[in-house]
Image 1 (tube, rainbow, N blue to C red):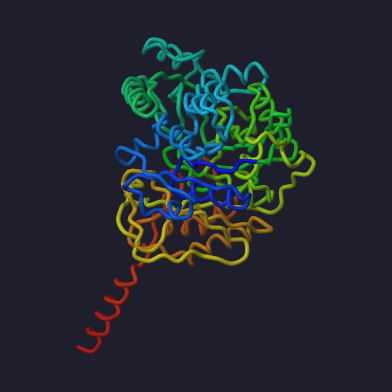
Image 2: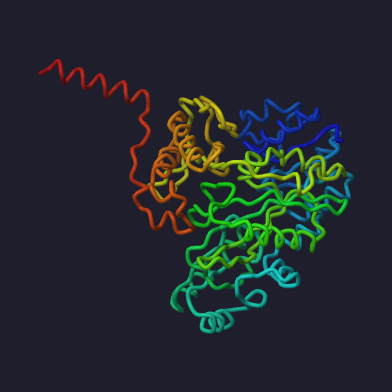
Length: 472
């Protein structure tokens, strides 16, 4: 096992990795920018070092990070998610520098990082894919030809990257040109690759993903699925496990397809194979994410398997600790992403100082976060502040527990998604398990909620009411 791991990330995922290392008695090294120097993860790591320049560049500078790892005697680097987690060049740099990259091989990352190549791979192992262009489109003529042959609507997708960047739904020739241009610009800026391909757009699907664990000894298992259908702009907000709509037969069939994809690229470590499931029950492979997912917590809650701990042991050359027969899915879990965003203002990011913080607790409640009272929410990073995950024996119990936990959650000073999530937990269709990727569009009522009242505002309101009463 490793003696020291450098965590090449920040925020809640850095804390998650540090906790797993602490349980394994592995020393940790954190990296931070000047903008994030007060982060909890910086204090909790055994060592911490400033990287730069700027708030973001240091987290993306693979050479600086690898050189630091070598200088401080780290055996391995855990990239978390985002930043360099899916960077094949960084994984290769670690390898040639004698540092273990806690993730799959650079070859697997390179192949899976290109969605067109991943689609071709899926076809080779007889896994269904969404009908689309053969490779990237070279220009408008190719794009128009596909659209007229397949029929609208279509989805524009970037060949590289993920996180919903560059995705556009097009419903007419008129929309196609502007959408192609904006998607390509966004992809070029985010991933350094502006190439695009087109797929038929599947209306109102479920977004289902299977968690995979694979090792270097030929073992590949799945840990069940997550339903990540509640999204805005193709970015996930609420995740549940297991899916409420998969039959045992369909679960087994999709799991087999996920394992086939993993075996085809000789995958090792944790990964997620993502599918769309249409209204008729047909599933289609869309991509494989070669890293830990933000929503991995719901899988951990229903399987009792520590995914980050598994990542570390697999990277150290050990076999997967459990067999497929030992994996059981118990109960239901829900994760809500507590973001510094204003849902009623098109999810605009919010910054400021946390003036009050109290996390919920009780049976079946889990918090993954890195914020505290007086923490200054920076403007340079993802808006995620914390992940609230609950588990219940039944779906109804899980929803009720999540609602109660959101009511207990006090996070003041910036706009957050907490009151928005509370509203969703009381919405009848969500409570009944009737939702797909169109949920937020078809349920505008969930945006009508009361904001959390600041304690100081409440004091002022009470004082004003008393004064008005006494003046009668």
